[in-house]
Amino acid sequence: MALIVQKYGGTSVGSTDRIKNVARRVAKWKNAGHDVVVVVSAMSGETNRLIDLAQAIQSIPDPRELDVVCSTGEQVTIGLLCMALIELGCPAKSYTGAQIRVLTDDAHTKARILDIDKDRIQDDLNSGKVIVVAGFQGVDAEGNITTLGRGGSDTSGVAIAAVLGAKECQIYTDVDGVYTTDPRVVPNARRLKTVTFEEMLEMASLGSKVLQIRSVEFAGKYRVRLRVLSSLTDPDLSIDEESQSGTLITFEDDGTMEAALVSGIAFNRDEAKVTMRGVPDTPGIAFKILDPIAKANIEVDVIVQNVGTDKKTDFSFTVHRNDLNKTLDILKPVQADIGAQDLVGDDKICKLGLVGVGMRSHVGVASKMFAALANEGVNIQMVSTSEIKITAVIDEKYMELAVRALHQAFELE
Ligand code: ADP
Ligand code: ASP
Ligand code: MG
Image 1 (cartoon, rainbow, N blue to C red):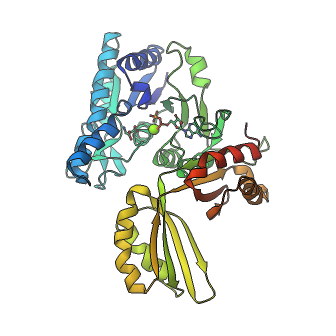
Image 2: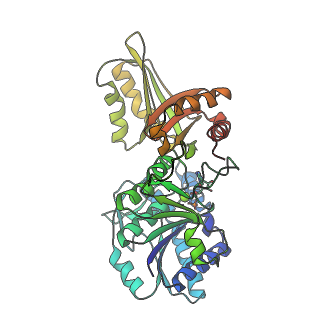
């Protein structure tokens, strides 16, 4: 008997029938003697619908009010799931993020969790109830409702598992684990039985949305045992079988096996490239460009600077697509101030990357990657590398071609 946190994503609670199936699965774990805390997302499509409603009223919605609107999707699913559990004779109680005081900072629409009041959950668990918590949402110190960024229910789940000291945080989703790449793009992608925490972090940072990056960071910081598994299997599957299924995120690369050179390929179309051309090549320029962006709470990713022969450089970096216009607005006065020739944004890019702890001990991964892309006529616009990751920015129209070519070149099938 142990405490388990289970998180169910949008597809898993996408209809009342699916919610009833989730209830059967949860009741199975509870009846086997476990304490269970469940974290749920909104029904699939619901958060998008709520954002569309907000944008129909205000093209750039007020962030505080957007959070008030967007957080309602999860409030529906917690209530429905509790009803389904009660119907099965399994006592259950729902809580919104504010009710269990998932305390966050005040960065509306991308708030960070600071603390969670575990006493209330613990009291209910002691009285034998299943606790169902709304993911994706919290409350700031002033009592304002906040949300944690798209895909944030993963982070709610892992954070709750961390404060409660759960034995495992199980992320139930619409695929049966973490694959070598998105199985919807490469049908012969292979499920990984285990993936190291470091690799998962890099894959999430490259935009493989199976886990939100902050959830992986939390799992690393608090050593939460994390497993990704399917909610679409038979809900009455035996506990033994289910607890071995999916993909386990491991902390140790135990060194007993030769690590694969490349474990996975991740990619996303969520970013845009910003380039300032003809920037005077003097100390402090990168700071002048990036500091106002950081102050506006905009995350910057791949950064590339090319120094020309005429003491001028081209300075490029990527930001989230939603932040592109804001970034350009912020940089217009900076461009004038530093006397740069040109400022351009490109939102037709894709970022993709190879990830693998095996890269540490091998050379030539980058050249093999570039050769595979060149063979397909794919031009690389930006590159960055870390110990276990190589990232490239390419034209988005080549995304699927490039991912398939790399999957084949590194024999990931
Ligand atoms: P949920 O609603 O359960 O949170 P998401 O849609 O956020 O689910 O994440 C699951 C999706 O992640 C899958 O349907 C799959 O298309 C996508 N995905 C991207 N990369 C991977 C990968 N490497 N392995 C598995 N799924 C991936
Ligand atoms: N419902 C939120 C979203 O769609 C949070 C989540 O699903 O994790 O982004
Ligand atoms: Mg998700």
